[in-house]
Amino acid sequence: MKRREKVFLLLLTIAALQGIMVAEANATAAQRLMQQLDVNKDGVISLKEAVRHTELLRNFGLIDDNEDGKLTETELAKSKLTPGNTAPNKAGD
Image (cartoon, rainbow, N blue to C red; front, side, top):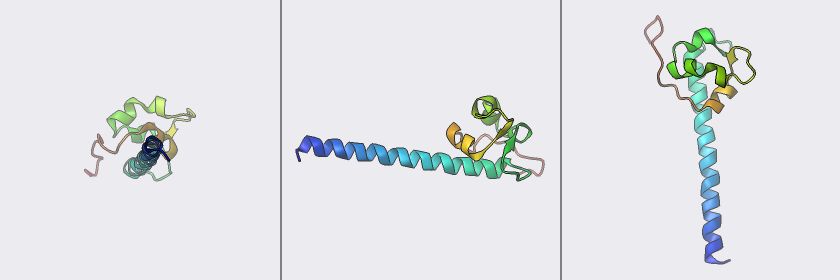
């Protein structure tokens, strides 16, 4: 195999691995967001629960793919939001 082909295959492999790592990071961030914001533990984040996360609240309508007024973990993972920017709840977490 020519050197150029080897370099090209190496670059393709790196790009594929990078895509996998980004997808896993988004899923992990979505799981953490769900744990932080799903106060009633029903598996979705309502608009009322989203109030604690500024960026999530600002983009709620864009993230809610099926427009049901609730965000699932899958919708959160697609959004690439992170658990940062949360306001403390009444318990002061």
